[in-house]
Image (cartoon, rainbow, N blue to C red; front, side):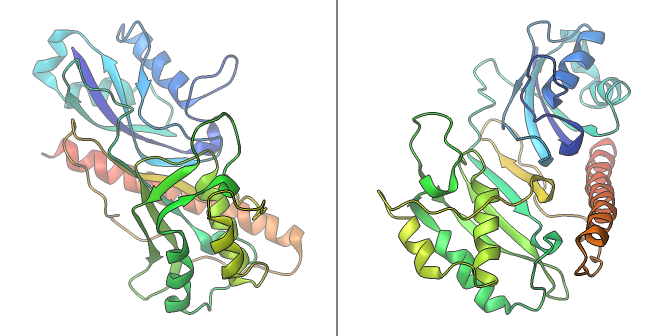
Amino acid sequence: MKVAITFSYLGDKYHGSQIQPSLKTVQGELEKACKRLKWSSKGIKISSRTDAGVNARMNFAVIEVPEGIKKDLPNGLLKGLNDILPSSICVYDAEEVSDDCNIRNATSRIYRYRMELLENWNKNIDLDYYNGVLNLFLGEHDFSNFYKKEDDRSTIRIIEEISPWVSKENRIIGFEIKSKGFLWNQVRRIASCINGILNGDFSKKDVIKSLKLGSVKFDFGLAPSRWLTLWHLEHEKLIPKIRTSFTEPPIVLDFEEDRRVNSIIIEAESKKHHAWLQFESSQMLKQKLEE
């Protein structure tokens, strides 16, 4: 029997989501847990690949389990996996799927980038101006300047949605971006570019030029992976999942001019950020178990 699981993880514990020889990965940990349970002997397939350091609030995978699991789905499966997996991975949903379910074919992927945790972030930026900067990326563009080239795939992508991620008090936390598929490092390069525009390092004209097919080469930098989260997936073969968060990220400490001080602040903020993400996962698991 094939089952699609929904799970979260903290990216700093792994060398990415996809299995790699001799390296600790999310897929590797899931496969080890399944092996202990004598499930999925041929391995598992993951919906979305994330790089080292990138977190996931939601990702999908397909595993094979004995037919006997069906009578205790999802609770028995969730208990079996979560009892074995490290605390940095949480499986919080499971549902039976047909043999023709290609878990890679998500209809959309949504990422959130937490801009307020960048050292040179301007927390006093005007929200309307910020929204205008985000809208530069909306629609169909050539993202060759926002891609770490790995093969000859097309760099044309459609950004279906991009919007400010704000608190109830209108504190700008970051941004949310939605597309059917992203290029390698695309969201992190967009985040770096947005921050560069807000700080006067790049102009809107630079971005508009860079997004045209056959544009000249631009280097907008690469934002840190630790503040990027694969937030939400949609798949036509799976039951729709919760997109909204249960709580807001904690308020950020003010950064200082001394980089040594900031490095300590960043590590403290990273722990708070991870605790918040894990609380989100715990609430999704709790909600599923109470259904």
